[in-house]
Length: 212
Image (tube, rainbow, N blue to C red; front, side, top):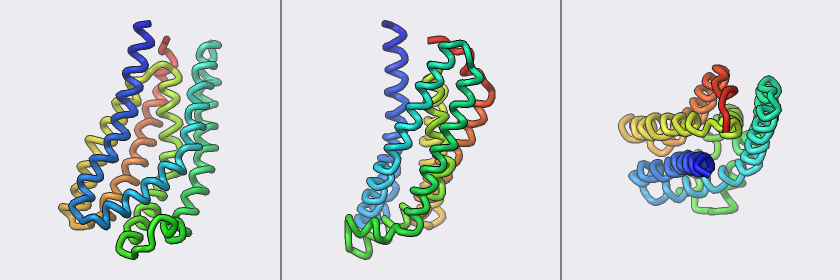
């Protein structure tokens, strides 16, 4: 029972860190006016909806990791993770291309106000460039959870989203004067950083020795 509470509490905190960072970005974007906030909100809604199938694939990878480790076959677990990441990359790559080429048409479903739509279009297009990396980042993060190592992705999320993404968004958007576009670029960089850091830690293989 104690293990169940510990794992669930860490997992909840892990999700909270990632979700709360979106609110932190809203605070920065709000300094550019209501149109920027509205455009960001519309773009974020589309992005989160598009990521739902990817979360399903990431959770499936976590299940496969737990199953393989339970069977005493960590190599099979590792192969499953990289394969799931590749499939997720193909899916999000296609979604990203749709966002890049059809962002105006997609945002049109939410608003036809030009001053709002331009921010929504920028959000979709710029964030989409990080989808190829984020595809792997999502799978790798959930794979740690599947192995019972919930603290590793929690620490990575804390670093990437709070100690890297939000300060970078403030620097690019406010201090350098790039506006909302700077915030969107920071999001893309954070997605890429998440994948690179998670991949580097995953290759160390310490998760293979975890027991639940």
